[in-house]
Image 1 (cartoon, protein in one colour):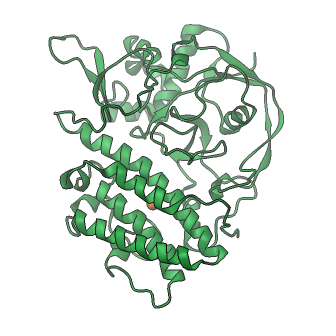
Image 2 (cartoon, helix red, strand yellow):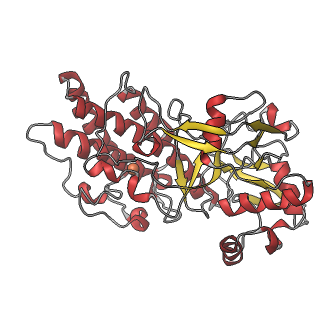
Image 3 (cartoon, rainbow, N blue to C red):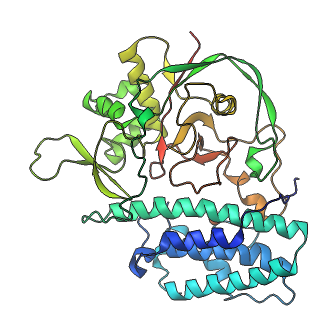
Length: 413
Ligand SMILES: [Fe+2]
């Protein structure tokens, strides 16, 4: 059992809550309502659920004579906490047309007022820790608002633009560099959150790991790198693919990264020429960071590239290699933070000595430690200040709607 602990200075409540509203500004009620797939949630649901988190985990514990904003919201906006009670089915979140967006915004305002009063009164260390968790949670949903909205807008043949200037650094200069490999000495190293400051329970405890010498790619894969794989028929040759990956590819008709589009206008070739993003439909450019591939695709690419390049077999990094390299910050290693969630070959599992947080918040991470892979690094959709080197993101191997990219690795020659 581990206790959720408060750290100073906490994130600023009003700033984090305000940023969520900022992301939704300019969206219509319809934009906020529709759910494009079971994995993604409507923006309105995110606005309500993040509020529910403060109401349920903070106000209910801290307010005398607590009364919920609406008794039905306890089930309606509970994501997955069995310790709290029942949940509305995830795949049916888009069918919840009432409460309206205006009512959800009222819910946010009322809970924010009650939270402001609580912060003025002062609270126990335990409640302060839950407030911090609520803000970290809200930041995670800020990223999901963007990825879920991108998926929704991608279903519209008009290719709506969310923000023309989104990710203005789409082709950072280092992406143009030849892909090199940076040696990482092996040995006994430590990974995991070392403090100070907030970390999720799944980043702890810090522990020793024995690493073999290896090398990590100097940069992430680019659109140009990936186009060579597509052009070489990489998606049509089973020898590059894990069995489950090949089954997935055939079942879902996968031919390219998610959001890649074949040429419009006068282009009659079968080549992929564009990709859809939050800035609308953009021409594919070789220097762009590659996003929206599954673990299966990342793994297949590594096998294909090994066959082209010769040299040591290429693979994905294991998460301890990734974190150790990020902590060392070796010269020549670029794009470790904030350009893409980088698939690792590591299954998402508890660290040795792991203990989930006490109570219902213990369901936050621990119960998902099966059938998923760890991604490292953060993406342009990750809110500023949210990510850290020890941060472990996790998704099933076929997941593509997050900003998932690829950094290659190999064992030392
Ligand atoms: Fe959540």
